[in-house]
Length: 321
Length: 231
Image (cartoon, rainbow over all chains, first blue to last red; front, side, top):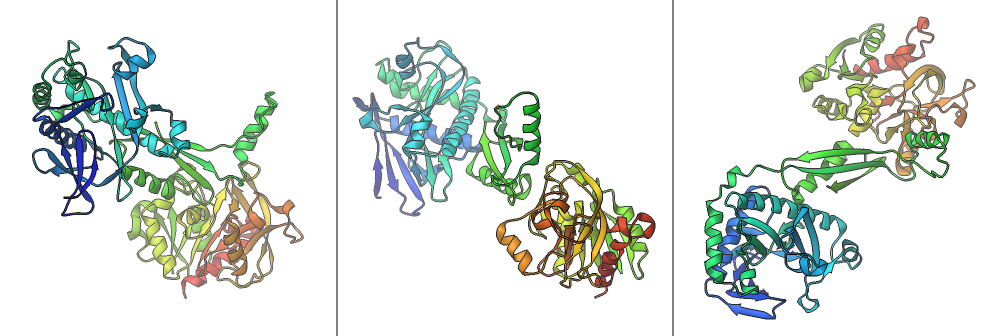
């Protein structure tokens, strides 16, 4: 099998049976600090692979689009080929790791709501935090892609958090990577294992890669233990989460907007003389039963053209909340 | 000939249309509530979509009605070459369906306009304007979204293909801005499709179908329509 890419803890191989698929091989290597600290633990690859398979299947079942197809060899997953977007998406529920160092705060502080952060996927630069404005201007991703990844990361956060909660496991934070498939769909890629997330028990004891970062115990035994707990949770008992999106419909520029003009006149009668122009449009709030996927976004554009807006005179835009 | 007069929830001109059509020899107008779907149009030789406020004008005037299942039957009949007229909200529905090009936007005044207007009928023969080519007629209008808009390319083809049978004008028959009640491009009051069998117009011919109503100029349009159902 041809090697497509070799990462710190995984190898991506071309699936000999299909050009649209790859085989992701999980190695026993564990690294931390951008590869400064590195060690092999026999069986780590297999357990990370098993857990990724388990959680990808769970998330797929909840409607999240992932690259996962099926399990291959014991440390291999068969996946859809996807070009990785060079942005790491981090979701945090509780302060830990670089977040604490960056803001000088204590580990363990609960955030008022989940926080999404973007990092550049580049070891040489030590994966720096990046703003959405910089991502867009550097052409690393489009704004729509960032909104999409943010929305999916929040869905993943909800579904993992609820599952873990059943077994008194606390999801502190995690890092996701996304890729674009041959069809142009953005899917959740990479892996989902304690290598990419922090999980604590109820006494805030680490059950993840922090064991290795902080030399606190047997990594493979801990991964196995946390996986056994996870498997005792009942995925069916996790309530589905709805997603709200907005569709904004506006009259195309160049076409008169009498309701806006009337509103502007009324504003000037009220003394707001500096209002140069008012244009009135519509906002639809749409609540979906499932997480956002490329397929759902495609359906939304059809909805917009077929009913919600009149493409002859109006333009429309979808906003993920 | 069986003429299906459609009624969507919120349509309110269907009785005026039925009454006006009943004055015309050979017309057998029947009321077809939209809930009957395709089956309601089984025997129809022609269709009138009357004015009103289908679905309360929610979303955009005509938008919700335009995706009802009965509209598939309207499309089929139009494709067969049978005559179809959409009046006022009916015109809005036909344009939302895409059977007629362009869109009907809010009146430039942002007001509901209800008054008698004059129309200059085009010199060019159409199925709906026989015996009235080039004439000046008087009909009432009553709408808030009658401001006809289309792209420049679309407007060019409407003109080049003589598909603008009715334009707003003054009492002297002059088509100018001062006689434009809603801001429509080129004073357009009504247009036809490429095939010539689908007419959409904002003014109400049924409300000008007897002298006692103030004018009977609209009756000719409906008579032409009925005659076309026999072809």
